[in-house]
Image: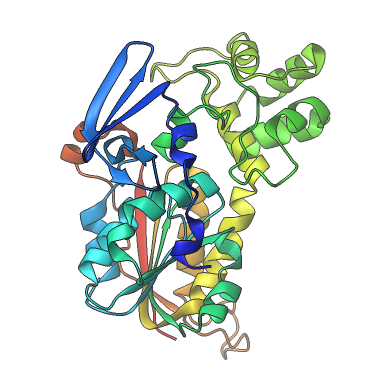
Length: 358
């Protein structure tokens, strides 16, 4: 799929969530319920435009530039292209000949990325789908092995703030949570159809929720539930507020999102695919946002950075395991204090980088 094939004339007016869009030269004015923004914009079609100043702010950009060792030319992969923030930096740093392939399940994200990256036409290919299946698109693109791969896990600010995803407990909308709207399973299906054991399991495993059983029982007793505010209110009656000020439903919403989008399964498969796709001395950089993701990444990189894995009691290696990765940073990299002050949503980001050696 080429970047040009993703043009959808007039699509932005739908997902900006503004009642009025007024074009004035190269500027756009958005109006909704008395809220006013005026900013430069990038045209995406015959009459629609999107304000790129409200797009998700990428985290740890400088650390990614250093971690991937970006250089002119090469083939690069952004596994979660989102709104194109990291990809833009990669394309700038690899000019003039660097080529980027970006993946995302969310078709809206790809449309935003298409506009954000329009200055790099001819150097970008966007693919709708999970990065777990990256090997086939990379093979079809005939790029050969790639120089660097970025995973920016989790969700974007736009997906949380924009209606239609059902990811926020601060407003009432359908319990959806799908990034890929073509898939069948929604959060509402999980809430209303999973049994007690499965609900309590995903809340405990994916949300690390200590009150998982209490919440699961309350949900089953209160079915059917169909909206985000219904679920958030229900969870609030089961969970004690903690000192962090985090909303009581945060962990449950995280667990449902992970279940609906198969995020952890994709991560396991995606890391293996990335290792296959990288050339020797190519690097993978992974930004995670909660302990479940970071644990998977840490264990994968640790295991692949070891050679023989035979028990110490065996004097001669019989496992024939070869070291595949070198850990670039043995300790996880966290965002700077300055970045956290500037972008509070970066505070939970954790970066790990590894280099392929064989």
